Length: 143
Figure (cartoon, rainbow, N blue to C red):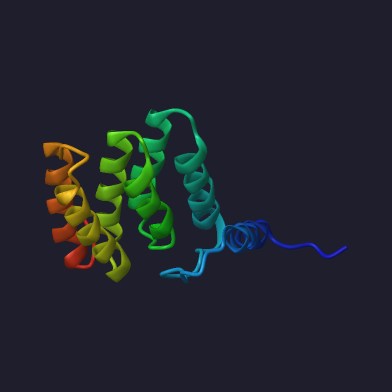
């Protein structure tokens, strides 16, 4: 039986799940090796699957602080579709921190969608966070 390092198994699992979900968008970067990569996988899973908005917020914020652009797709998904306004704000903040072209484009697109959708009343906290995140992402990310 062939043995793989733990982070290789995690990476293969993420690629397999992406293939099953029909992901066609390539990642901004490869999954970091070691504990950092394992943390990204675990936090991404918690942000997407945990019932508690508090856990999803903490996971989203932690993903932004890790400093890898790998989880940008998960953060974009949380920004667009999580039912909790606090998770959306955390995902927006983290996208601003990690920066990159995809994060900046997603933030700009969401800003337009969010402010022009007649079905929602824009929240000031979201608008403020979007403005700050777009500025940071435009500068390449960071605090």
